[in-house]
Length: 473
Image (cartoon, rainbow, N blue to C red):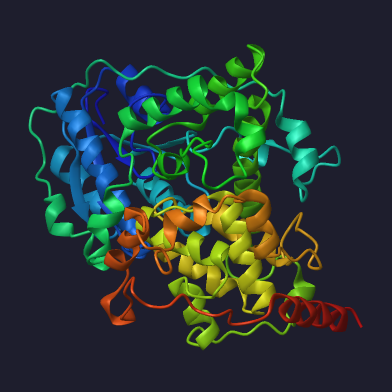
């Protein structure tokens, strides 16, 4: 191929222009660049809320590229078939992309790279989704980390490359290939009426993500460690959704956190630890991909969790009608905003897997469908961590009590009032929005009586601990 041939930059979960190594490498060649997004089986299998949010991110990138007199070519189908077709149409000589680490993407990308290289097409993958490639971080004995704390100590002072500036221009091909229309993909379809509600709470695109980071560093990071567990207080960065679609690079967050820490911010190091926690999730996913579909600790395979997805308890949990205000408020926050406060995620997961004795995979699957910030590694590790079956897990006998947790982290009842309408003379708008977001088939309305507890907390805890003790015999 001629060194003047076009380069296809295959966008996936890296929907930004700055600190994009694959794009930067393509720009540095001086060759024409054809940005591409492919809706393949992996995209189609994404949960309803995440797929909707992904579509919004694609649209934001389209607008960014148009400002550079470029465009994002959209195609659907098998990724390799689409790329081969585009190469034939455009005579492109190379395909560049940012690496992903879940098993399905790794299998797909390995096949694409191998096939294209065999056909004489340059195929290059670059970092960008993580700070540290999972295979580059090792214990002193040469293995991978199974516990977070020593990994944090190992990566804390590792050098992280500076961020790369966004290109000021992209060289266009002489002729653009045809593109499908994003509206025809209908990526909001599975959300149905909830799409309009959830969309109001999204911060979409690279520009918004950068503004969100700047605001967090300027206004919130100093109190982050002290206030991050209080769900009614706007004390967190909110960047999880932007990280999910690569609208902001982890390096940008890392360097911003380090600068804040060096300037004396009390909460900055804890913010850095949370970024490293995400790295730990991907470190584990790379080395133990089974974390996605079976207990990381094999001894938990025989634990007597219920696997009935249609049971009354599971339905009540999904609807946010368990009679536990912390659990119900958290679930409703998710249906209205597409996200859930991190402390609340731990509470609802503990309640499902311990008080209700329901398998963590049922909760993990539900979050996958309902979260706009769904991330395969973080979701799997989070559920298994709380359930007790995962790496570096909270001990199974640590059962979060949603009542005492609410008293500790929402003493004034602000979180409950924000998301639960029943029983209030003048419910908040966010609490009322829940009834507009959830499926009509649930037949819920704000005039209903708030439900009684579906299980007494002490009884649920005792049952869980008895099962735990029996497992050890």
